[in-house]
Image 1 (cartoon, helix red, strand yellow):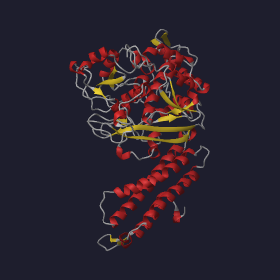
Image 2: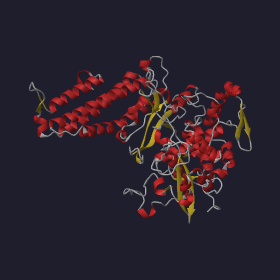
Image 3: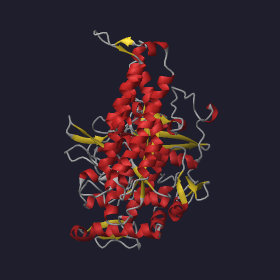
Length: 576
């Protein structure tokens, strides 16, 4: 098959939704040329779309860190036109004007509402690196000779060891040869069927969300744990625009946040621009990449694909896991401070938090606290704040923060995908970045206080439900209360998102917060009333609560619940 070609620059392989709500499959050239005419990426999974989005951003970040919106190299760079790569960097000149130049490029592209011809020129220059079937530079792969040189001799291709089935790479199945997936979307005879376009999409996705069951590793001087994929170690957040162009632009961080702006962060290093041996050597150091393009396209595996009658045989060799602690160059994650290690790390999601909506963690996305080490904004939010402060995006711009990802099974020896999560919240830019000098009037602070207040009401719902189980003499470790609490929050999700999206900086803060209080109380009482209306004879009869002989039943707990809700919400006399 070496004489055949499937070039991602010109062959359709990326799934999108167009302006007519129809699915299309487009090439890289088509996507970057017509991005404003596509609504969104539309792959097999939302997590696949995120991996593809970051791949596309890597290309844009590389191109527009070298060339401005007019397609000309920045004055602080000397570009080799043959390779379209920098050969020298004037640090003094960059210090004087570099940040402004990059922001001017971003501004020019955003207001033009299209990417420029320089992106197509770059793709054409490296077209041979985007050929999925190339015998010399296969896309996201090593050649057979390169793969054999990087793995132990007993793991070379001829030994046919260390292979990954297509059905395992396909994250809608994620099935190994040892444990069949009975809920697979494909029947058994077709689990390994995959078009070349789909293979390209899953190849990129697999590098980002990789399990750790591999038996083959690249040769290294020291032992190492294989990488589970960079995105697996994040709690992703990114901005979503009104179309694909806006989504790409809002996430196109030309001026990295949270790190020093210097030659390392501006000089992009893409895997396909380097010899495989050089790329792997850098990965074996265990050092997190210092530039966004490399971070967005980072490999967790060295992949080689052999073709047999049109069917792929995929060889995979593990690369070292990178430490994501304090990797502040990464803009697409929320953070938490580890008091034991005294460092920041991504605040990961686990299966037990799968149903928790994004708005309930509002304070993790926008900094509202003053105390040191209490909060750290995601880099993408800081970037959007910079754009808003420069008036590059209008104050009334509706910003949609989106989270998407895969949660692993919690087994340290497998880390296979167990569930996918996806959520978003919309908020106006001037609300999200309200500069009001009075902290109590800043919308972010008021929103976070409102969320905390709602969580207290949710806790009251939980305790009321748990008291009912106590009346029934049932010890279920809070399982029933958890289900009732989940139902309460499910009912709140849509109204809170609508309340949040409807806020403006001209609103009277107390009036808007009181509006939400009424909604929260209504939903809480509705949830409690359902329990009251389905009360059992034991719930009504009640039980003796303590040694004093106090009798409690569902009605006494209900009265306590109603009074407590009014107190938390600051509603006097039970008025709503």
